[in-house]
Each structure stands twice: as C-alpha cells, then as structure tokens.
Image (cartoon, rainbow, N blue to C red):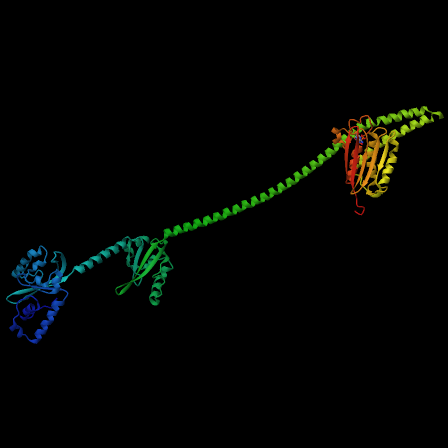
Length: 585
Ligand code: ADP
C-alpha cells in the first residue's frame, strides 16, 4: 500500500491532524494551506480511516506515532491505547526484545532487512494471542528525522482458508487414492487426466500408464472405435447418453480380457473448462454371483420340474395300480361270490343228495317192513286159494281173494304215497283250481273210505249248507281229506266217531276230529316230518308219509294246517285255505 507516500512537510501535519490523539494543531500553519492541499489531505484522511489493512507509523526509537482504526482492531486495541507506545508491544518474542536493535542496526548500517520488502510475520494481540500478518514497511525521511510506516494485512482468515483447503485436498486425495471404486477424469477429448490406483488396478495398469491416454483404451470394441464419435456427438447435440446416468458397460483390461462395470459419468465444470469424471464399479463378482444364483435357480427349477414329472409318474402308476388292484379285488370278490354260490349250490345238492339217500334208505327200511305183511298175506291167501278147489270152498276162496285185494290195495296205497311225494318234491305237480261243491267232494271221499271203516266207526259230516262252492284244486283237496280221514280211521278204535266239518266264510276250513289214540306231546313237533311215526303206532301199518304230503298240498294252495291232540282222547286237524278268486289269472 503506497497511498501514504508523503511529499512534503505538510504530511507531518496531516498525520497529526487526522488522529484523535496528537500534537496540538498549529493554527498559523493550517491557515497557510491552500484549498487544494486541504482537499487532498481530507481524502487521504478518509482512506487512512477506512482501509481494511492496518497502518501504523513509528519514529526512529520505535515509538508509535499514529495508528489507523483497522490496525488497532487487528491487534485488539483502541487506537489511543497504542499511540506513544513502543511498537514491539505488538510483537511476540524474540522480536519484541530485539526490535530496538533491528532499528539501530538499520540506522547505522543502512542494511534493509524488511523495509521495502513485504514479509509474513507474527503479531501479538492485546490478549496475548499470536496471529500471522503480512507486513510492508516503508521509510520516510524528513531530513532531520525518519519515520517508518507499516502496512498490516491480517492473514488469519487466509491461513485458515488455506488450511481448510489443504485439509479438503488431503481428504479428497485420500478418498481418491483409497477409494475401492475406480475414478478417472477425462478432458473434452477423452484424454485421461487423473486415474486413481483402484481404477488402474481394475484395468491391470499402473496409474502412469494411463495418464494422457485416450479413455477408449479401456473399452472393448465396438466402443473403442466409436468413443470419439460419442464425445463429438455429445458436444454437437448436447444429448446425454451416459452422463448423469449410471450404466452397466464392459471394460477392457490391459491383457485384453473384458469385465462388467457399472459406470457413472458426471460433468464437472472446472474454471473455464469442463472435465468428465467417471466412477467405475467392478461388478464381476456381483455378476458372477448373480449368474450363479440364476444358474442355481434354473437348476432348481429344472430339478423341481423333473421331480414333479417323476411324482406325476409315480402318482399315475399308483393310480393305475390302484385301479388294477380295485379291479382285481372286484374280480376276486365276484369269483368268491361265485365260489360261495357254487358252494351253496354244492351244499344244497349235497343236502338233497343226502336227503335222497336217507329217503331211499328210510324207504327201503319202511318198505321192507310195510311190504312184508301184505305180501305174506297175499302169499298165504294165494296158496290157500289153490287148495280150495271145490264149489263148497267158494266162500273161503272169496275170503282169501278179498284179503289179497286188501293187501294189494295196501301196497298200492304205499306206492301211491311214495309216488306223490317224489312228484311233489320234484316240483312236477302244479295246482289247477276249479269250482266245485265242497259238500259233494266230502260225500265222495266218505263213500270211498267206507270199506276201511272199522266196526261201528262212522264219519259224520257237519255243514251248514248242501252246497259249498269253492274254487280250489279238487285233486289236492281230495288227497288231503283222504289222508286225514284214513289216519282218523286207522288211529281210532271200533265204534269211535269221526267228525268232518266244512266251513266257508272269510276262508275255507276243513276239520277232521277223531277219538283215537292221539299223538304223544313230546313227539308232536316232528309230526309233519317225512317217515315220522309216533312210538304209540308201531303195531299199526303206515309209511309216515301221509301228513308230509298233506302239508305240501296245503302249502301249495297257500293255506296252513293246525292240529291239537291228546293221547287216548283224540286228535283234531284243521286245514285253513284262502279263498281263490276265479277271475284272477
Ligand atoms: P302213517 O299214518 O302212514 O304212519 P302219517 O304221515 O299219516 O303216516 O302219520 C304220521 C304219524 O302221525 C302216524 O304214524 C301217527 O303216529 C301219527 N298220527 C297221524 N294221524 C293221527 C291220528 N289221527 N291219531 C293219532 N296219531 C296220528
């Protein structure tokens, strides 16, 4: 700052008059100043008071003569606190101690150590703190004495800003150097200016290999050949294809191999030019991991598909097997049922066979027993008849002929019974109903049986009317009545009455009641069995087939037979038949 270069003696005045504290004004001198000079002085005064830098003047002894407000403020004083103080007050050690010597040396040797040379020095504030400032000292020689003017420019802020800048730079370069991601800056032409170690390493280079080279060096085809075009296109059109947009691209290493990178490019205005910064993130690992996951996923899907197919196969097989099994089970069941049925058939057949053979054997034993008497009767009567040749033997011959006839009738009866039974059992007999008078049938049967009635036996017919019209199988009914009435005759003594009662109401009832030997109670349950004969009839001829046949006929006519009997009192048999409707088919 050279504003205070003093030209004449008036300057001395200027200093004094401009400061609050100074020597008394000399009015005579003041009045002798020209108006020009006054204005000039006022301007200088204004500058002195308002400049940002501090201004201090000292004399040859180092005593402060004047100090502007900025200087006082820099050192933390009021200006009046400093005037007349020694200037070394504002210096830290050792300068505060040695300052007098500096002046002395200069004044004697004329060797300028600082005067006319700007220098950075340390100042000491009122509170003792030190601070850097730039000091420029000029010297004014008034002939009889010299004054020195110091201009003080506080460097505290600058230093702080410098320090902050340095720190920032250090931080940035640390980041730049140690970043895991690659950072490359290029100029407008694509020439690489800065490459961080990570970027160089990523591409297999040394940093120094790449500085000054075109960035396309790091790109595989087709980008290698096209990159210059990309840049010039961008400059021409301003259309950003990658700037400001992160994108996955291919990088090319020094050895020619390629690898996937995520590239983010930003445009950085730098003073009057522009650079481009690329942040490069190697995504080989991520890519590989992603590919691995994709591969695993694909494999998994494949496996799941295969398994599903296999499962479906197994399920299908199972279903098929199940179906087959179900079919088999069905078939087996059917076969079993058939077997069971055939077994039953076999059982029934066997049963029939057994019954038949039993029937045969019982018939043989019955026949051998029952046939014997009539046959021997026939034999003896026949041999007697051959002896009775004369007319006088007519009566005796007649008697034996009748005996033979009776025995034959007996045998015929037995054979008829047996024939009826076997025909009934074979199902060869069907009923053929017809309308007839039941009373008439009863009369006919009684007449037929008249020959076998014992002495004084009588069949008494009980009926309300002479004509009881019924619609039944006449042959069946006749057989039933003959059997029941002949049993009543056979199993009751001479002179006993036999009652035959006919009733036709809601149903048809035929009752045969005798006064005979009766049926022992313990044997009554076997009464209708084939060949059953009670133990009180052993001396009376019979086959044990009659009642069995009766029951069969009655059942064929949809009726039933009931009985009651007491030994030696008599028996009653009641046949109950439903009325048939002649109009029914
Ligand atoms: P049969 O008379 O030829 O022996 P039935 O089948 O007619 O055969 O009778 C079976 C048996 O029932 C007879 O042997 C007899 O023991 C008994 N019975 C049947 N009717 C009478 C009756 N009216 N009184 C007593 N016993 C009877």
